[in-house]
Image 1 (tube, one colour):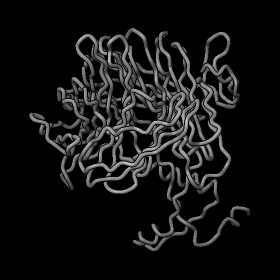
Image 2 (spheres, one colour; image 1 turned 180 degrees about the vertical axis):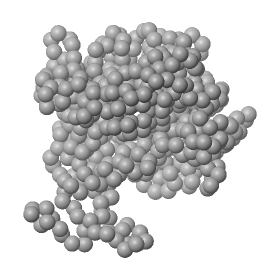
Image 3 (cartoon, one colour; image 1 turned 90 degrees about the horizontal axis):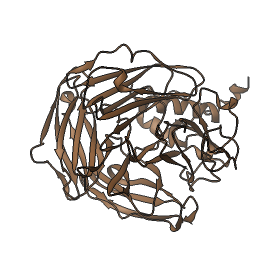
Length: 517
């Protein structure tokens, strides 16, 4: 079963248990009846897990928490972030922010309680306005977080780190992840020039047991070290990939599977010459993948793909350009051998225009599920920076991304199937400003870097919310850009749907009285 389905079932069960909804069986085959009686209700609890941002003493990290306004929520709720230090949140010290000794969490200095030592203080007053806090150094811990009530639907936390020098210097960013039981990371490496870690964070009260498998160009890299890794409750484990195998592989696919419990997973990829960034997990294996928002000034783009099943795959490669879908010359198709990682250098694929990659591996019975990600370089030799674009799910209804600046923020939108209408909302600023919105019509098969709305009187950072109003499927990503001593630093975050609401069948009869017996 796909993890989206598992999450939906879990969300429905949790919501039904909290709100007292009861369900009745529909007649066999009565899908129309089920759809007619289902209510789309806001989720009441969300989890986010942030990996330890850096092992560099020169790292400066900003966390931004944001929840969009959702109709139908009650007036109660809270947000909590705690250090993943092996203690349950209930046993934490409650010392939010960074103390006088400069150690621990954000600069808030304990002005608001409710977080454990080492965690930033991100307690919002109301949905629709982001809250930011920062921290410095190599001792910043991984975080486990929950949002409840009115702060739960669509809650997102952005972690953005600047590293002044050394391996992985530049701009590193990730949207703090969701706990799950399976993850795919094409684009990792154990090459001598790279130092890659897979970060595993456990949000629960019991230990999780995890297997980490590596697949190179010749197939699986055998290792017993990656089997049965224990991640303690409310703790995080960074695992250096080169300790799992002796193979020197430039391009790897990492598969994280959880035997018991659940974790969040992300790969930190550090390059001694080309900076580094977080590699987020791809969407589930599928016969069509979309990798949105390749920077228009990308100097080199590498596709890393993997077919996890037993069948080979022939990928049809297309670029969604501003004018529509085109086939890149010389890269019309890519053959993937089952169980083997394939990397293809696509060069300066976008050639100065906005673009997204669309991959298909057959239709119907001939379709072969695959996973894929892009490794992207900006800049010239000696002053290059690396980031990743994983395949992502579409924005079915709504998605948000926090931590945007007035300058250096690029929002890339792609419509597939038919043209689409979207609304983009810019929130109030974390330190002041008035929210604003814009509406766009996207051409079918095209990618557009839209002219962003920016809050009036913006102070601090702001959040962007993308809502699909009508039309075809919409895929989105956000790029943050900075320049450090001539190096074009950047990081890309994709925007899958926030799943802020869940379909709950309406009861034909009030059975809440049964719960009181």
